[in-house]
Image (tube, rainbow, N blue to C red):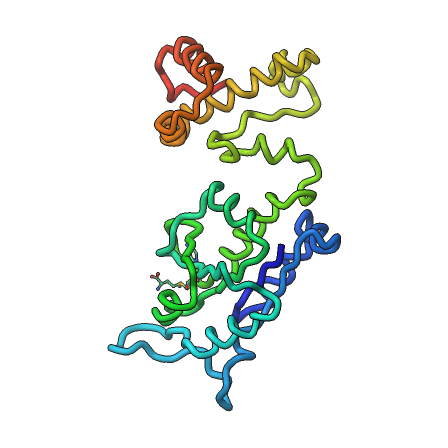
Length: 256
Ligand code: SAM
C-alpha cells in the first residue's frame, strides 16, 4: 500500500513515521508513505499557499491551486481514487472505515491548516472528509498520522501477531478484554485464575465474555448496533445473559 501525505509541515509528519511498528513496516517495504510539501506547488514569488477568506472574517484559508497541483502531480504514482481531506466536519474515523481504507492499494491524505481549505478542494478534489473526533486541532498532520497508524495495523505483517489485531478493541465491534502479565499477584490483586489454567477453550470463552461485559458497561451503543445487524452469535447471547445475571442488571458496576 502507498500513502501520500500532503502537508505544509512535513517536519511534523516525517519523524513520527520512522518509529516503532510503523517505522519497521516502512523499512521492510510493507507500506510506503511519501510526504509532499504543498508549498512546493505554489507558483508565485512568495510561495503563497493561503489567502484571506472571501466575505471577511478571521484567519486564512488554504488556496485551491497548490493543493490541486500537488495532488495532480502524484498521478504517475498514485491512482488518486481515495483523496482524503482530514477535517473536523468529516465522517468520524471508525475501525470499519480503517478496514475499508486498508483494502485499497493507495490513498492520498490532505492536511489542512489555518481556518481550513477552500471549499472547492472538499467539493472537487477530495473524495471524502474524515474526522478523528469532535474537537479541533490546529492542523491535519496529527489526524493524518492517526489514520496512517490505524490503517497500517491492518496491513498483513505490520503487527507481528495477527491475533493481537483481531482481539483489539473495535476490530469486531467490541471493546477488548482485560489483559494481564506477570506477576500473578501484585499488591494483593490476583490475575483471574482461568488465565493461569492453560485451558485454552476456557480462556477464549472468558476473554469473549469479558469483552462483552466491558462493551455492555462502557459502550452499550456498540453492542446494540451488533444486535441490530444480527451479528451476535448464540454463544455471545448466552454470555450476555450470564453477565446480566451476574451483574444483576447493574451495568455500571465496574469489574474489580
Ligand atoms: N475552521 C475549521 C472548522 O471549523 O471545521 C477548522 C480548521 S482546523 C483549525 C485546521 C485543520 O486541522 C483542518 O483543515 C483539518 O485538516 C485539521 N483538523 C482539525 N481538527 C481535526 C479533526 N478533529 N479531525 C481531522 N482533522 C482535523
